[in-house]
Image (cartoon, rainbow, N blue to C red; front, side):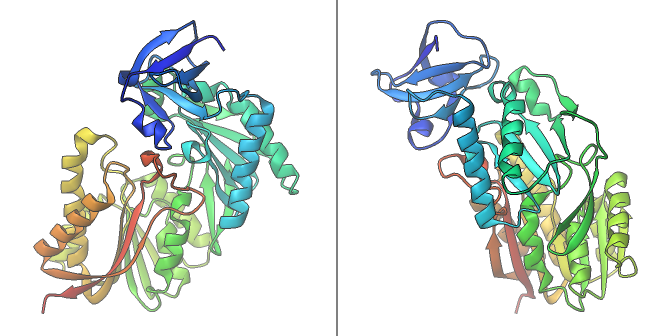
Length: 399
């Protein structure tokens, strides 16, 4: 350990409150030498030790903290304990057949995500310091899983997000170890999915909606259901298997729709589920003009904003899509709607939904408010770990 980072007086409030990030404008001085991605000691302006983290001059998030213990060695024993704790938590909180085992900062391993799809691991590394540790973390995780009789047959890396460029890293995608068939069959809530970990969005499948998909089921029996932004058909298939009369799933991705049709066949419900490759924003006004009405409308859009600078435009997008969705719900029917953007706060999302309801002349009765599945834990004081807001409403005509 060579370098010591000293914070400005009054800086580091996020870290002191329990967060893991220190920004470039919070640093007063650097004593000693370091390499980008290397570990440094961090102290407050008065010399009080705050712990250790890895540094990267090419990132606005200058330091990502690994420990609050200034004397802690960041070695195999340390990493193994972090990995073991993450797995033990999942075993107690979620179905682990397929789940997110490591969720970056929320598991005190900043910048790395590892998803388990049956007997395959998918790794996403987003920070330079953790990138240098990722293969060792994967090996330790395989050892921890093996203790519970789980043998991992392959590991695939999906570090191809654009955000890596902000860390001065190239995007990377490929096998970590021996090649294997990257089409993986998983079972979630009794629904079968073929997950393409090589070419699917993000790590191949959105595990964070696991229990939200289950929550929608009770509304779908004998219902006419519209599932917008269906991706590979997850909400649509849950609706069909819950006994929906008919389901229409819509997505702009031809790849996603092709996979959704395969998944419908896997689950023996292709007779009740129709998938359509269309732009949802263009389709919904057409359905409204055709006087289509649905018992249940599900809106699961991608993040409309990935920065604070684009929040205003995102609000317009969420308001428009929910306004259209509400108009398509039969009186007394149900709307399930969500935002997966960290920058779309729960307060702003709720305000936007109310604006949409006012414009649509609808009254909303809240059935449930939910967030991401427990394998994506929300670490208080680490705002980026809280991103998914999910509402179920009954939509009523104004009296």
